[in-house]
Image (cartoon, helix red, strand yellow):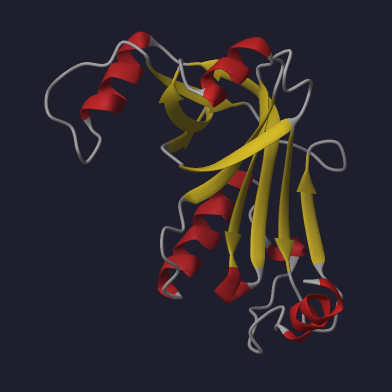
Amino acid sequence: MGETFRKFLRTLPDFPPDLPDFDPDNAPGDPALLFKQWLDEALDKGEQQPHAFSLATVGTGAGSGRQPSSRMLILKDIDHEGWHFATSRTSRKGKELAAEPSAAMNFYWPSLGRQVRVAGPVVELSAEASARDWAERPRADGSGNPDWQLYAIRPAEIEFWQGSNDGNHIRHRFGPDGVLPG
């Protein structure tokens, strides 16, 4: 690939020309409300699967060391328990979460030049909530799945990022650099 590929990548546009304005001083103080506002705007803009996010976990096995891994999932809910997602306990991410119960999720909406990053400890939600989530899946056939687990990230940090064509990107943080509503 070399130099030609590197130059090709430099020619690709970073953002669309008409990005929305974002003023953190006028944003809701609750990050869940701001997320819902941004999700609605992504839907209005025609983003496909705006509830999809990349989940990053940390490997703990002998072969993987502490190598991070990520994959795309779907947000299930946001409530007092945290930001919900689900997977099989026997999957790679399920095993990684059992060994190292912390993760980061990242949402990206290219048409708006926006992303939201959520990071923190992960908890397993109840067996009842997990079974309900399995049963509500679009492809549900009435059968159970005892390995299915609903999890929640309890945010230690949330960052809303608004891209800008002039390079003056806006970062609005809750957590270590701000206040995370309890």
